[in-house]
Image (cartoon, rainbow, N blue to C red; front, side, top):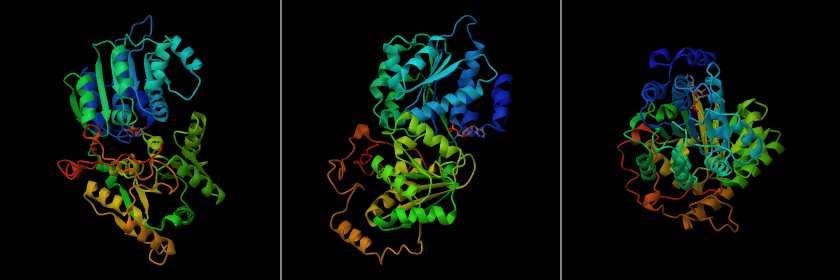
Length: 445
Ligand code: AMP
């Protein structure tokens, strides 16, 4: 299968060639022809599947083919949950539109609005936006959405997770009723289905290659370790393995800061990325990481979501997430674009329950590895961990002092229930349905 056979024209093919893509990815094969036909699409796809090109290429073609020669109203609106993802999508749009007469820009919060307003005033065909800033600028009359022909909701599940449902509904009211709609989501909860029902008209369902193709490329290992020795273990793994690009997940923003500081003290260049960091700091950290001037990026789940870091060789879960689906998202950061990767989880006694939940979701046992010098049974601390976890199993992994969230294990109410698609084997599995109470993501990010 070639990009040409999907119906894409010369200027886009040239841009694709310059990106070095030889063949369309499965999601691209399925989505591009359907989008070119003008149909609504409901797509199940995670970052790493090539979904961005999957929707960007056909919308660029449609807009180019139907362009008004005189002026540029916003004709395609791409909504996305995070600033990083917005910036990445915009980079893609720019790359792919190099040889067509299309102007695009990106708007998100955390930076001054004035330059964004100035760019919008010059006329924009394709706008990439986070919901909050879009509504802000709309209320300032800096943009109009009345001529939007194509709406793209990217990472729709994460937008709902992040509480954007109201913003999305408000945005819908600003759009013309007649338009093409594309909704991309990694998971399909009841909420996503409800959102899709309200937005899409007779959508064509498009699924990426089974999401666990990524996971199959990933070697997953569990290192058992006392909680107090996790930093030492991470340092040793990175130093001994001479790893140059490692993404580490922590549960909390403070945890991310702490670990990053400790690594820097041990002469391992590191930066933390999370919601409390300024946009500049986040951009700088990501740039340094991509350019290999920073070896370790320590991130929280939401901050890391959607980061496009190709060929990431190592992902470490410093703490396991209490939502098993988040584990699947995390390890999706490695083994991408056909490369193999390694996902390592540092697991203390109190996290064993999370391992069981993850294994249940994956329907697969995770390999437990021992690292010399980190003998769990001989470590006083771990015995302490073990005793306390036997007495009173902790559901979270927060510091013990004063945080009201620290042991919350609130059942998710049903309408809030998250249904993840990730691994293939899960389809048809009813393991999740057996539990009607789900933990909330136990994080402050
Ligand atoms: P995405 O899922 O859109 O975040 O894309 C993940 C990565 O795959 C990005 O780095 C893209 O540049 C890359 N990519 C997208 N399409 C292709 C393709 N057809 N062949 C090779 N790489 C691709």
